[in-house]
Image (cartoon, rainbow, N blue to C red):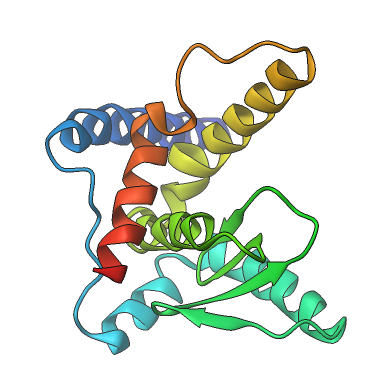
Length: 167
């Protein structure tokens, strides 16, 4: 019974965060990284650990397969040939080899993880994953999705947050 209350609380808090951020990101979509690297890493490795830990496992697997990470901002990414998608897991990301915009977008998701921590999967990652597959299925069926990929606040915010680092 207690587990049910914890899950319900998590879902309610996540829904509230989603709604609040949707409103906030209309005014300013940029999540700004802290100036201190030590603060960024300390928070990411504690508050953001639920996303960073799977990212570290994926990064270790890719590293053992001979892939070399590149540092972008304060995060490490693996630029892979033959992919046309991106994946962010806290401090680590995967992006296509020749797509700086996708890499920066994934870095933006990493900055979101700094702020959202354990709520990142429910508020951003799962909705983003569903959106990605929905768009992919629409294109395979020869349909053009009604709006742009970054038409939702968390994707627009990730792109704006990553681009803010490169300015």
